[in-house]
Length: 586
Image (tube, rainbow, N blue to C red; front, side, top):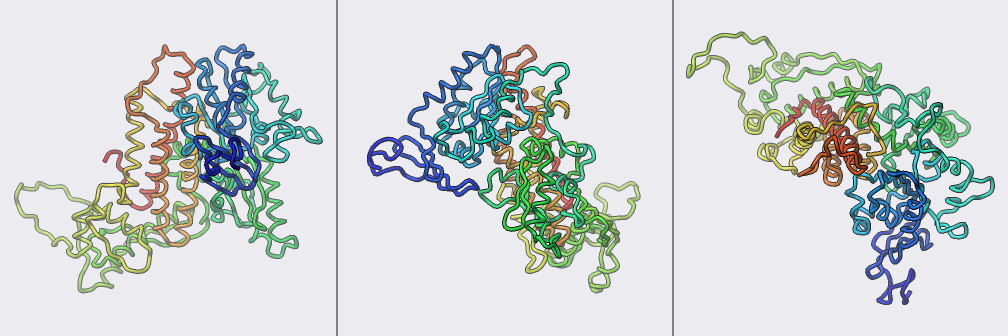
């Protein structure tokens, strides 16, 4: 450990920066002086001391490539030497990088970012978090150059069975991958072009996203709607993995138990082209990992679905009654104001989850409950408005406006701010709000943060239109362009909206949806920090710019505009369910 090289630095030894446990074992990032090392299960994988072989792999392949604007596939991100060399070549039109480790991709956003810094700002680069073997088995490309950099040769591999030809010809050097490498760049007249994103159903009749697709694919006797949950932290491809407990319900009376039931369901899902993997975990949990294209396709599906993107069938067949929204300012106490908001929002959520809701007015019940303080007309009335002349400065006769803490807060902060603040409260316990905090215009105020995220997305779409940028037709959307970890994290958040709305309805907990929207807003802001749809000072290539970089910039911007539109749609749908406005400008 004392000398230079992979084992030490000569100044006290390497320092561990991060140590994570993944499905494939332990992964460690260390720093030795100015250099970085990656260790997998105690086996040295790579370091930053010498990247000549990785760079040579790219330059040698490009030297033999006749294409004027080649498209490259790099299998294995590593410390970024191959990626950096690829983007340094001006003639390269596109660089796709497939990396199995989400942790390594994440380290490139922090500790290792300086190693290939230009690549992360280059519109030609697209990083896919996937197992290379599984990813190559599906239709992709075609590519002019493929660089395999996932192992150190047949005798030294970081992962058993990956990258080398074993018995039966499996692995990266097997016959199936060899045929993929020989695929011509341009499909012939009888060869179908690979589908960009094959998803079940149609985008215009969206009722669920991902979890709903999985529900329909499983088609179990007991519906799996409402049983899905995110993958545990540290799961490989966690942003694309969905876990259900349905096997435990179906196994009652089954001789094989939950594990056997889950195994059968996993086999059912494994045959779908939009499911990358399906496995049994924890003795009966079914974990399904969808493809990166399936997740990215939500950008189009949610946008085209509009407010319906929050709908599901989780409560189909159920019936319940709910009160129509009344004037919040007339509530005599904070507890009564919370009850009114929660009752109405729960009805909206149940309706979105497929339940039949009977809406009624609560005026008589409120009057009977508070006979000493009859309900009076407030700023908003449910009845018709009679038009007539009003003399300026004349007093208008009528009932006095409601008085009390709720009315004062509504007058100060506005109905939307108070409604949102009440919706995010627990249904029981103290109910008291600070109107000044509810009205604050900063991101520490949850209501303002969610509305601001919606307005920001709307502003990005307006700015793009002013610059002449368009997201284009849905048929031309390229899901592989939304492969950055922050984009995948936002897509994952978007995919849970129907499930969270249904769960909030089932438990009569509007606060669940409010907190979900706050998480969605954070994911949107994080995505805009790293992958903004419209950058400040952005110059849009004109129609005469036919360079690979120009085309790549326009294509990347179009995909990100779809994602911004999906975020705006989902945030607007969620705010609508809470009964709060979704402004396009703040």
